[in-house]
Length: 290
Length: 269
Image (cartoon, rainbow over all chains, first blue to last red; front, side, top):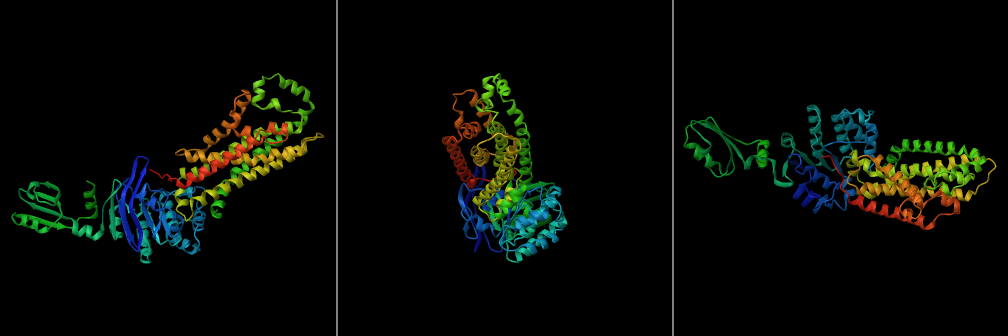
């Protein structure tokens, strides 16, 4: 069953573009990476799914129910960690977490304390006295304490130190192993690569690619580097070759298509060095954005 | 209605309620303590006031008040009580959802399993409860001040009740009009200027309407809808105007719900 099902979702803020014609779906138990630069529409998509904002056109379903008409029911099983965390400044951490827990039908006390211990939260401090990273930790506990079935993480690692980031990722993996579906938005590709099964790439409000992370790396592009005397960018003028860079006898390029075409070409050259490898997600990503 | 939101909202406003209530108690008791001095010198006082320009007396509503009587004097103070109540209620109205949005905690609240209707209803009831505490404090201090300082002078308790009963209508007007304005403007960055604007603005309009006797400003300002001088003079409300006031409140509430349910919650950008 699809946990998230988005169909031609469009959001304009007056005349300003939010997202345009976005469609995708996420299956139960998946970790879906949603990547794109700032302002591409990642947060807009998440906020639409939480019905914090309303779509201009198109529709979205979570747990099979429409987000506009069934918001409260859907949100019972959703955990949300926003990219910027803001809480009631005058409250103590423990009071905020209890307030958060009070919205759910079941008793969350035990999980609340487990998570707080794991995240090393100081429960009696005021929110206003916390550093950004500590507020983020409050956000993590707040988003997970009711054992949600679906997690929205909007650039969750910003402000966390590397040690905490690792703890956080382990936590997400554990949740996922228990069957929790995760929607993970980020512009840091390394973390998406580490965690996600599938990715959607969004650019200027439109989805440009949705694929399995492995397929994206393996079947799509090869990163080729050839070193030989007298090579120029023009030496590899083949269909499917992109991002050609040549310097001092070394040519780098991306290739999509039948790799034999490139090998054929290389066979005719006296090379000193050849590497053909899978590009990092970062490189694929840059490719989409150029 | 969600009890958790109600409790949270009520608590955040508690300090403000205490301060407003103390200030109003002080205002009522302090000013009313001069009553016997005023009443004793009533003839002198009225002669003295008669020398002020007619417009100024009209602006303060003093042309129709007899400061020598208990309720005449009380209605003069009540005008300032109304002004304070107006500012307090508009403050809560403007801040009801906008504070949450400007401090960006709305994301937290609205990502919980509650509907917008529940959120707004809980918030409104919490604000109304806060205002009711202030309201009750005004009742108590009014009765206390009058029985302490009226001396041997009699007054009509029914008229006093009419004055005090009007408070809740008055508060609801400013609460709901403040709320609807805060939802109509794109973003309220700071609540206080708006609240002072609405509260003082309506008062000044009412004062002007006294100055230019024939201008029909009484239709738009609640200080005219519920005019203490009128109530004391007639021993009754100006029913059409009170009904108009209630109608505006109801419209503002309905529009507020309509807008809030459809509202896009602003985020940092």
